[in-house]
Image (cartoon, rainbow, N blue to C red; front, side, top):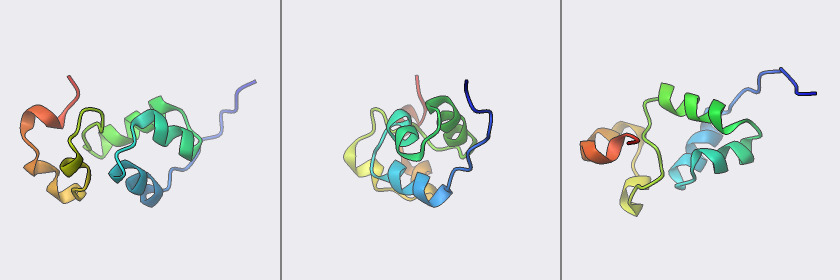
Amino acid sequence: MQSTAKITIDINVFEKLYMRGLTDGAIAREIGCSHVRLHNERVNLRWPTNQGLFGWQRKLRRSEFERIPAKYRFEN
């Protein structure tokens, strides 16, 4: 039986793991939620996927994401 309780995602933990370059699936495992839920949270925050990012891009703050060339910002 699956639980229908909604897990609250700590944005600070999410951001720390995201900035380390972890993928949605890896972050979801760390937080204890589904990768779909985490994907939706990331999309709502307008953060690009970490998959395919270069190392220098992983170190950017959220406010600096706009400096990433458009072709690297979004999933294909």
